[in-house]
Image 1 (tube, rainbow, N blue to C red):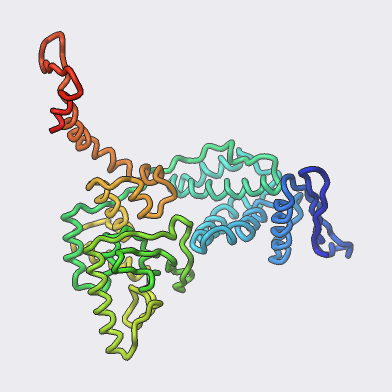
Image 2 (image 1 turned 45 degrees about the horizontal axis):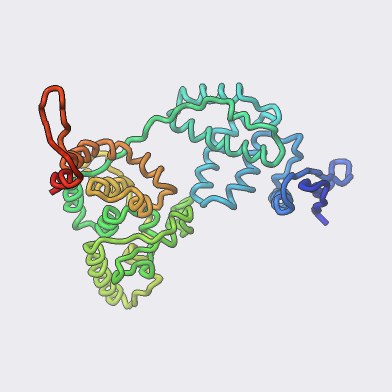
Length: 395
C-alpha cells in the first residue's frame, strides 16, 4: 500500500505515504495531519501520490520555493485551470520566480526577500508585469499554507506594485464602418464582423462549429475554444462556467451568417465535400482551423489601412460592450453576453464609459423631475399640491 488514512480525532486525519527507499536503503515515509473531513484528507493523499508519480515530491522540511512552485503548477493548476492559463503561469515561474527566489528553502522565505525582488524587478519590468508575478507567487504560497508547509503566507505582508491601467481602445460607430469597409474584401471579414457584433473572444470565435449556431433562434452557444500552444492549434473547453454560455445575436448577424453558410456550402461543393455540423464556422479554405496569430497579424494590416492605429482584435470585444452600454443595454445583460465572472467585474472594466454617460443620464432625469420651488426668491415657483400635479410634468 502506497498511502493510507487513519482518523486521529473528531475532525483530524493522519496521512501516511511510502515515498520509496532512501539513500541508506531504508523506506521513507511521510506523515501528515489534515484537519477537516475525510474527503479533505483523501484529496491531499491523492495530491501527494500524484507528486510521487510525477517525480516532484519533496519532504516538506526540505522544500525549496522552486519545489513548491512546481508542485503547485503540476498538482493544482494543471487540474483546475485551462491549458493557456497554465502556460502563462509556467512562463512566469520558469523565467522569473525560480531564477530569483527558487533556491531559497520555503520555510526561510520571508516578506523582506519578496519585497526586495519586486523592487529590483520593477527596474526593468512594468508594474503590471510584476503584479502578475506577485499574484502567481501569492497563490502558490496560499497552496503551501493549505498543505501545511507554511503557517502563514508571507505575500500577505508585502506591498506589491500597483498595476497601471491598461489602455483600452474602443471604436466609435463611424470607425466600425471604416474598419468593415477596409476589411470587406479580406478573407477574414466574416470573423471580424461577427466579433464586433457578438463580443466573443478570438478563441471562442475560432472554436465555433455550425452546430453551435442556431440561425432560426438567433443564438450562439460557446462550447469550445481554439488556442495555439507551442506552435500547435488545439481545442479546449471554455475557461470557466461563465465562459461556456449562450449569446443572442442581432437579426443582421443572423442574416449574415445564413448567407455566409450558403457561400461555404458552395465552396465545399466545389471541393467535392459536404459541410457538416461539426465543421468550423471560420476555417481556412481546406476547412482547417485558422491560426489565431495569423488572424491578429492580418487584422493589424486592416486597421492600419483604415487609419485606426493601435486597435487590436480584442478591442472589437470592448467596442461591442461600449456600443451596447451607450445604447442603453443593462450591465447585467452585457456581462452575461461577454461571459464575465460578475456584473461588478463588467462595471469595473467599463467604468470609464459609464462615467462618460452620466451627463446623458442627468439629461433624462431632467426631463422627468419638475423644477424646484425656491421660496426665498420666488424663482421657479411651482405650485404643486398633489401627485396629480406631478404626473402632469411627466407628459
